[in-house]
Amino acid sequence: MLAEVTELKKNFEIKIIRTFPEIPRFGIEIDLGQALIKNSPFFFSVQKALSWASKFSPLLTERVSVKRHDYSQLIEKSYQTAKGACEQCGENWLPEITFPQSVVDWSEQCQDETKLFSILMQKKNFPTLILREV
Image 1 (cartoon, rainbow, N blue to C red):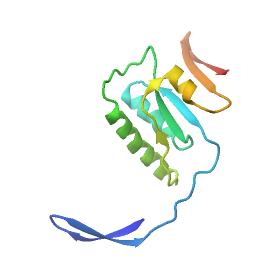
Image 2 (tube, rainbow, N blue to C red; image 1 turned 135 degrees about the horizontal axis):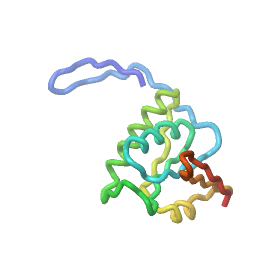
Image 3 (cartoon, rainbow, N blue to C red; image 1 turned 90 degrees about the vertical axis):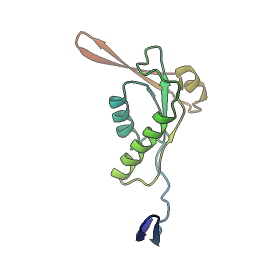
Image 4 (cartoon, one colour; image 1 turned 135 degrees about the vertical axis):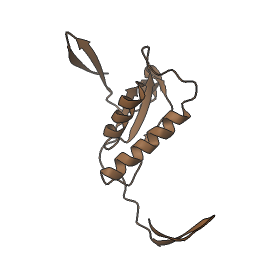
């Protein structure tokens, strides 16, 4: 949408100049599950992944370093991060971001025929990536 601010006082008014048609998302549907980690690396992963993933699911694991009772701020910040990432890569759609859930619940809820889990493990000063199809 292209708009012009026509009045800026106590209240403001805008005039819509032009609207653009919504372009549907192309490609395969990917539901990315990401364990909750500290904020800075978590939102970095949200930013990088959401330029290609259609759905993002924060996961609660045994070793979650972020303990919260209210996840609404996390989801709101994730949407803001996703919005910026999608704008930067020229997309005009936002991915779905789910409420944090356990890995088991996410796996059962995910309806895709193929599920791919990746686990990053630290061994002898270098990370090992283990991929397993379920």
